[in-house]
Length: 68
Image 1: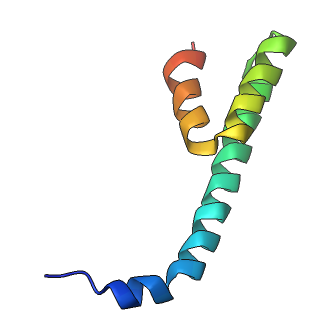
Image 2 (image 1 turned 90 degrees about the vertical axis):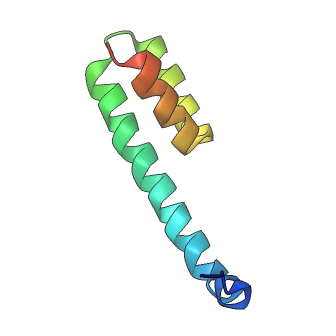
Image 3 (image 1 turned 135 degrees about the vertical axis):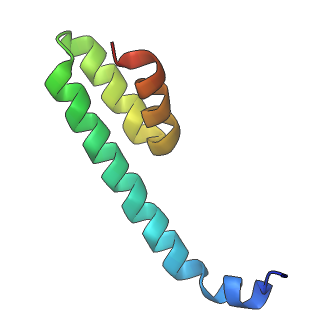
C-alpha cells in the first residue's frame, strides 16, 4: 500500500484546521485542570503559559511532571 501524495496535499488545509482545533481543545482542557487543581498561583500561571505556547508538548510535560 503506497501513499497518494497528491491526495494528501489536497487534504492539507482540512488537516491544518483539524490540528489547530485539536491544539486549542487540548490547551483549554489542560489549562482548566491546572487552574482548578494548582494551589500556588505562580505555578498555575507558569503551567498555563507553557501549555498555551506549546499545546501538545506542554500538556504532556504537565501530565508527566505537574500532576501530583
